[in-house]
Image 1: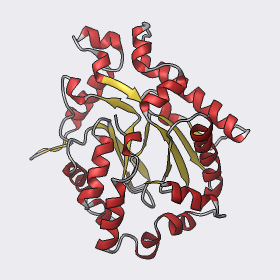
Image 2: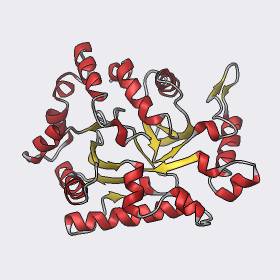
Image 3: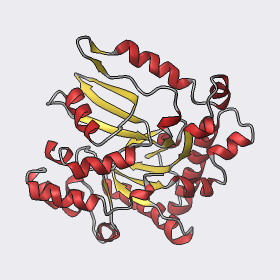
Image 4: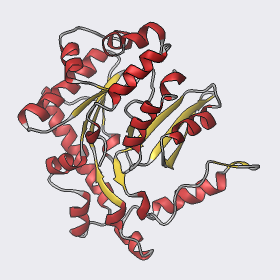
Length: 302
C-alpha cells in the first residue's frame, strides 16, 4: 500500500484537496484509536513525512480533511511541529495550539484578537456519508442522492467510494451554500454568534431532507458528523482498506449494473489491479495516479 502514497502524483492530488483544510490523522495503538487534528499539509512532501512519523513504518494511518475550507494565511499562527528534535512528541505545543484554535471559531473571539473571521473561514462542503455492512445498500442510497442532486436539482455532486464499507457524496462549497439557502459569511453578516455551528446544523438537516426525498426513508447508517461545526471526512485518494476513490461516470454506471455486497466485489470493479496485487506494480500506481488529476478536483477545492 505504501507504493500508492509514495507516488508524487497521488500525493499532489491529496495536497490539492487538503491544502485549504484542517487535516486529521488517526491510527491504532493497541486497542485504542488515537488521533491528531488541526494540522496542515503545506506541500505534497508533507504527506510522506507525516505517514512516516506517525506510522513508524509499520502502522496504518488514516487521513481525514475538515469539511470547512479555510485560509491558513489569515491565521496568526500555523500549527506547531508534531515532534521537536531532541525532545520527541511536542505535547505542550500541540495542546496550546488546540486551545488557540478554539478562539478562532467565532466572529466575536476573532474580533477580540484583531482578526477578520470572514477571511479565515471561506466555506463548507455538504457531505452525505453512507456506511452499511452490505456495501451494495450503501451504494444504492448514495447513488439515489447523487442522481437527485444531479438530475433534478442541476448540481454537480461527486460520488466517492470510502475505501471501506460505504460511499460519500460531496457538493462543492458554493453549491452547498446555495442548496442550504445560506452560507458562513451570510450568517456572520446577519450577526449569528457561531456561524460554523449554525451552518453545520442547517447542512445536517438538509442532508437528511435530501436523503429522505431521494430514497423515501430515513437511514440510521447516514453519518451526519461531516456536516457539523468541525466535521471531517476521509481524504479522496488516501487509503482505507482500499483507495478512497472518486467515481467516474463510467464507474458509477458499471456499479449501477451490478449486484454486490462486499468490499472485494467493489474493488474488482473500481480497482481491479489493486485487488490482484495490492498496489504491487509501479505501472499500476502511475496509471491510477495520473487518472487522479483528471477527476473533478474542483468539487473538493475552493
